[in-house]
Figure 1 (cartoon, rainbow, N blue to C red):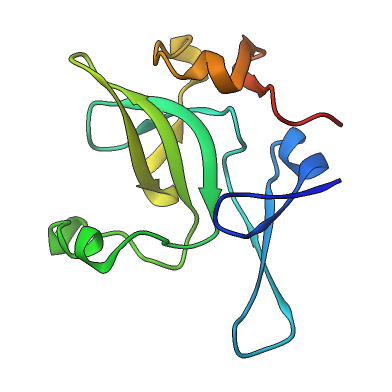
Figure 2 (cartoon, helix red, strand yellow; figure 1 turned 60 degrees about the vertical axis):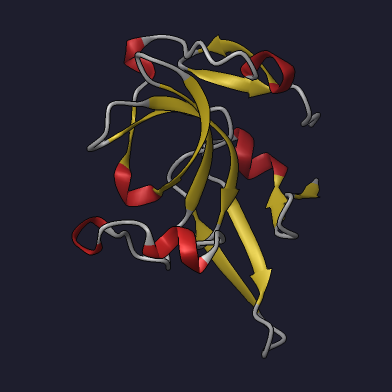
Length: 140
């Protein structure tokens, strides 16, 4: 089964369930598909390597997909590469809940620290089970 995310990329549903998301995007100038493997699947519990927040992955971009203004606002010495997966997270820190957009290089797995309390998680996921949340929108 193949699905499209909000950015027009094909998502292989079986791979997402296996924690090996495969995203494909047709390069605009070519007729071949670019295949990118992401480290974290939908429902993965992750935390930021530097900043004090953690979250649940709810979408993945195979490469940077936000605005140039957003990218340039990151201090140059901490600015991640554009050519890697970027994750949309239901995020939390000790003070609040929010949505975050984070490069793969800045995330680590964090299921050992238990569930994430973001109030939007329940609308998209059940669980957690075995250290990850299960998407309510994907039926195999």
